[in-house]
Image 1: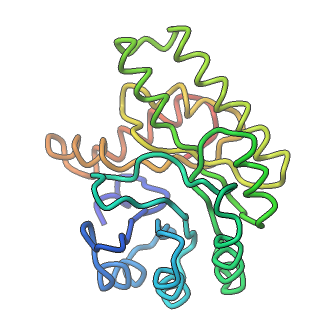
Image 2 (image 1 turned 180 degrees about the vertical axis):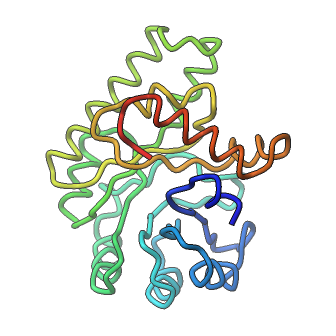
Length: 222
C-alpha cells in the first residue's frame, strides 16, 4: 500500500521454487489487494505456470534460478532452452498472461525470444551497474557509455521485433538515470535499492524519489 501511495506503477514479486522470499499465499493476497498491476517473476517450470494461471498476474517474467544465489544473477538463456520454454510461454499466453523473458542485451537471445512468442524482453542491467560502480559513479566513463549503448541497441532490436522493452537489476538512485533515459524503454523493475532506502525515509518516500528520478531522465519509462 505504501509503495502504491508513493506512485509505484506496479508491484513485482518473485515466487522462488524454494519460497525463500515470499510464499504462495502472499502472491494470492497481493493480487486481491493491490490496485496497480502485479508482476510475477518465476522460474519456467510447470509448478509456477500452474500458479500463474490460477492467480492471473498482469505480467509473468521468466527468470533463471540458482539455489545458492542471493538474488537472480544473469539473464535466462532463451536460445539454449527454446524447446522447454516454448510450452511455458504458450501456456501463459493461452491463459491471457503477458509473458516476459529476463535476458542479456544479446541479439541471439532477443531473436530467440521473438521466435518463441514472448511479448516483453527485460534486459538484465547487472553488468551496467557493476561498471557504473567501478567507475566511481561516473556516467561519462567509456565503459559505462559502451554498456549503455549496448542496452540501447538491444532495446531497438526488441522494439523492431514487435516486443516491449523493459530493464532491471541492480539499479539504484545513483545509476538509474542513464538507463531510464533510453528511448523506447517501457518499464524499470527496481526493488532492493528502494527497500534499502525505505529504512531511512519510509517506503512511500523511497518510491516517490525513485519515480521522480525516472521521470526526470526524459526517457518516458516508469
